[in-house]
Length: 343
Image (cartoon, rainbow, N blue to C red; front, top):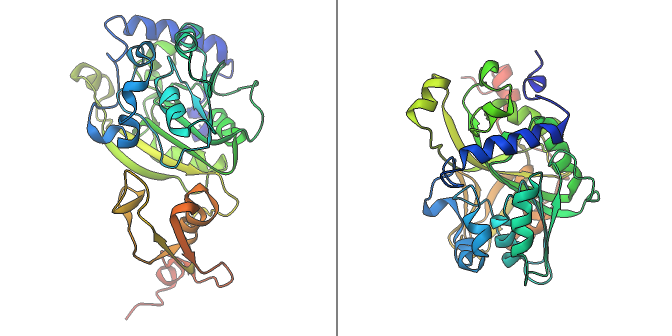
C-alpha cells in the first residue's frame, strides 16, 4: 500500500465528521479536556498567549478540548485561520494577538461547538466562524491566510493529504502553518484506525512522523521544523491497545515558500536575530535543537534564510548574503558518497 493511502480513510468528509462528533461527545461527557493530548504545562502555551488567556470568553475556554495552544510569534496584523477551532478558545486567543488590524477565521465541522464560539464572539469584531470540514473550506478564498493554526485536529482528519493541500491553498506565499498534534514513532496498525469511533481517541489517527515529512513535502511544504515536543498523555489501557507504539505531541512549523528546498543547501549566508520577540529575548527558536542567540551572526542554510528574509519573521532578522553563490548541501552528501574527505 502507498504510504499516502494508509492515511486516507474516506473522502466523504461531512458524514465522517458527523459520526466523529457523536463519538467525541460520548467521550467528553466527563469534561471536554478528558481526552486532551496536550499537557497542562507552562511550555504548552506561549507566554504572550497565556498573558491574555483570561480575556477569552469563558464559554469558549471551558468547552475547549486541549490545554496547550499553538500560537506563533509576530501575529499582529495577520489573518489567521484556525482549522478545527471547536468552541473557539484558540481563535479568540489569536484575535487578541492579531489586534484590530488583523483577522481570525475559525473553521469547524461541529455546528454545536461552533454555535458556542459564535455566541461568545460579541465584542470581537476581528473574528468570524465558518461551519466546514478542514479538508475543503469552500467559503474561503485561495491565499486568505498569513498563518494557519490547528490544535490536535490534523490527527482526526480522514484524508491527511487533502488536509495538507487545503492548508497550502489557504496560505499566502511565505505563509506559515503552525500547529500542535500527536505523532507516532511508527505506523498505527490499520485495524486500529479505520473508523471514526477509533479515531475519536485522538491516537488512532496519529501519523508516523516519517510519513508526515513525506506527505507534507509532497503537499508543498519542503522544510517542516519540529519546535517543541512532549510525551503524549496516554492511559495504560490505551497503551495496551497500541503495543509498542510511542506517541509524542509535537509543535511544528511548515512554511509555504518558493525559496525553500527539500534539503539544507548552503549559500554562505548568515543571519542575526535582534531579540525583540516577547517570549524569546535570548534566542530565536528555529527548531527544538536549533536556537539562534540574540545578536550573534550565524552561518545558516537557505531554508533558514527563507524564514529570516521572506516571511513575516524578516522583521526580527538581519540577513547577510544572497543565493548567487551555491556552496552545496550542508550535510556534505557528495563528500560522504565519494569519500572525498577520507584520510
